Image (cartoon, rainbow, N blue to C red; front, side):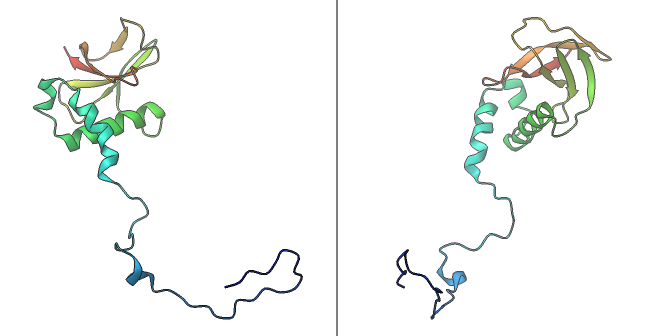
Length: 142
């Protein structure tokens, strides 16, 4: 199809318009859902899974770990609400539905070596800290 010059004044009409059969021409089937999850997108979370202590890896499957890490990030960003069990000046502790006996700690100032948290339950030390975002931690129940 020829394109008229820019200085051409008048109407531009396509005389022959053929519709391609995209269902046949595509090398893969058309997408049926709006959101697409590629397996490579979970590689980031699987790297985090490898950094977990062995005691947690024995309990937690990789798929549950992916869900747990996504939930931790959503709670931190305020996209979802977690069940809060304790709070301090610089941190909040949430229940961890994927790990019995462990909690999620989201610290406002992760550089502090000691976090003071007031909780209904006795809390232990941090057993895992995210390498890229130190404010996300998993703590053990005392």
